[in-house]
Amino acid sequence: MDITRRAALATVAAATAAGLARRASAAHAPVELDMFFPVPVQGKLATEMQRMIGEFNKQNDGIRATPVYTGSYDDTNTKTRAAIAAGKPPACAIMSANFVREYVIDDLVLPLDPLLAKDNFTPASYMAQFWPALALNATDQGRVYGAPFQNSTPLLYYNVQAFEQAGLDPSKPPATWQEWVDAARKLTTNDRFGIAWPNSYDYCGWLFSTLAMANGGQYYDTSYGGQVYYTEPATVAALRFVDDLVHKHKVMPQGVLDPNGTTAAFFSGRAAMILLSTGALGFVREGMKTPFKVAYVPRNVLNAAPVGGGSLIIPKGNSDERIEAAWTLIKWLTAPAQAASWSRFTGYFAPNRGAYDLPEMKDYMAQHPEATVALEQLNQYGRGWFATYKTVPVRKAMEDQVQAVVNGRAKPEEAAAQAQKDADALLRPYLERTALRLPA
Image 1 (cartoon, helix red, strand yellow):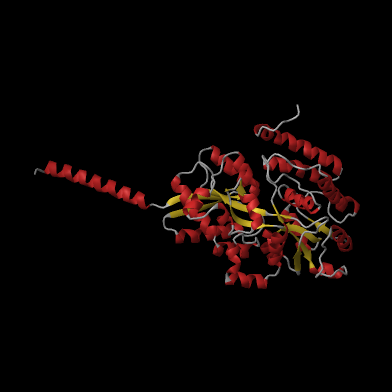
Image 2 (cartoon, rainbow, N blue to C red; image 1 turned 30 degrees about the horizontal axis):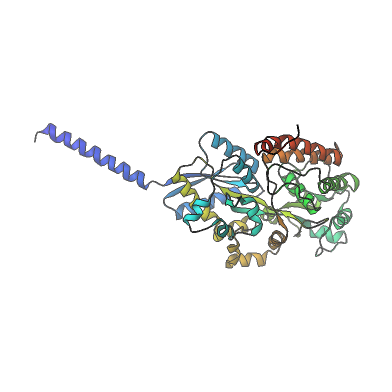
């Protein structure tokens, strides 16, 4: 064989070997997936999420997950929708649990049922792993669309030292609105308010819905995405209660406070009681230099606690390979060990009930009795979280009016009427789309 022929054959062999090597390499390359995640409460949550995903990657050679911090829950929603529209959806996302309904309405999220079936779960048996109240925002029409990851209820945080100075018993926090007002009056001084809570966007809607429900109201239709009850008597009365706290009793600051301003006031002693998420427990433990305790949100008619937090979803538009990898990550993140770890770090309660059977979680609960309060409140009084068509603008329709009331720009009755009018205009396309009879 001449030199030219031998060289040609060698070139062909080399090219064939290189092609086989590339195919072998591709076959063994890890599946790349991105996970959008928010940090809706204060603390070092983003750093901890990076650590957890790093651990997942060590345990799963075939997958390389990258956590992408996307801001607040509202920011994460906006960025996820933009990515889907651009044809580049994240493989999965930790989405505000109450946005799941809207993603179903807009046909942007995959049902998890086929993945559950491969693991021998039915929707009912899968959801049985989690606390019952969480199903309200994770399912729609019997199908599962969200895997609960981090969940919370609102809590009343209060300063033990301030209670003692005011002649109040820290072991007996206010349980009713009247007791709450009475305590707040005693706690309010020239340099301290009795009550404060975040009434900036998102937090405001969640906490105000809590008050409306605690006053016996429904606030929104839990079975249909096109109806809210902003002018229901219980809701209007809750708005009047907020107005009274600020302008009549003068136990709550006028103006809009964000979560950082609320916790800063609590840490510095300028607010004796605050409403805040369970998910802030870790942050408050770290920042509060004097003793504090937590309690249920006070009731007027009944106890109620809408469940907050986030669920893991798989947006539509992903390849089968990425869907399977995302499901592997979701199962890992929501398993008892990871759920327990995240709960201990953040203060969110662990959605997976099996987390509380672990020795390390039992020790944690024994050392931090305040962590049991949210869990008990959830199990006894958990409600669904506000979920409608166009959830954010419909939510903001009331938030704008709550802010107007606390700023002294509107009276409760007119504020509620305006909120209902604005919400109805936003919901009307969905009503029309679902073929309801509407007035001309």
